[in-house]
Length: 416
Image (tube, rainbow, N blue to C red; front, side, top):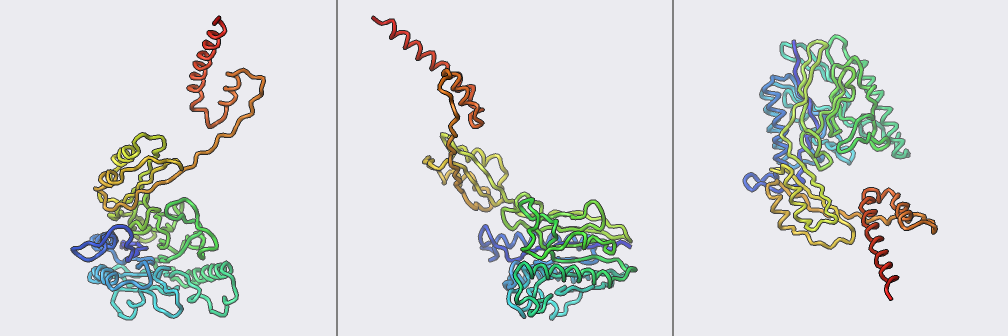
């Protein structure tokens, strides 16, 4: 029979940047955005009749969520519990307190002993009994912290890079141990909050920087023992093993955190496992648009109007918007901010109207031999790359000027 599940992560309840508080509810509008996106995943799972719901870390934005953030999260996951849907949560780096010995932001669920809720705070194999569908194994792996994986006396004298190397080695060994403990007769899924070496971060195509986070190679996880590898930590949706199986997937964050993510679709994964066959699809959430409007107003007679014209090219309705206009360093033309704000009024939030300056580079003087004619010297000067676009116009006006000067010179020569 087909096993269905939702894979999400990086919920980040508690992000309240941009915007303001909704006076009707007392909740920050951005928090309501995150609630809406996560609720879409919960309702989708219930509608599709999923058997379990994976949340791969960073449930909250800080390890000390407010009672309001906790209340809204619990309200939503209890909808899954009421439908007898298993919820598996791995501890993420944002869920972990800095101080040793303190509870993570989701440890409380272990103490409450709520049925169908499972917390992964250490590497372990969780075997779920699914009604009428047999069993499934979840190899769970939380964010690797030195206090949980290394004895203090083993890293007290080590440098940061050496600690990361030790953590990486321990992680590889722990994952290998989990794989060895899996029963080959039961389908298996890996669920972890990890940085994979080949992953791409949000907002750029740069790969994970070695030495900053303990990183795992894709090949360590893309093992035949797993039908699916569910990850959290990186906010950009991606499959790191798209040419083969199992899929190694980051669903990405459910909502845009900042402008580094403005070009990315946000959502979660819905997957179906039937024997060894797995299909999945990315489902978008109603995430708040973020839009950057770049305008070059150098040499413009009316820079305000230029900015407004550029704004009108975008659908800014209910979006978080910033305008960045480029000027020269010595630019003095005033900007009519009130007019620009009026043009931006359909936006949900105006993050900023930001001036960016660019220094004019002095044109490097070309070497001009003294024995050249005027036009020969000009042609030599115009060979410079910076002047290529204007060269024909400059030559035309230079010829007119030269002709005019010669006419004046000839007139003076013929005067008595």
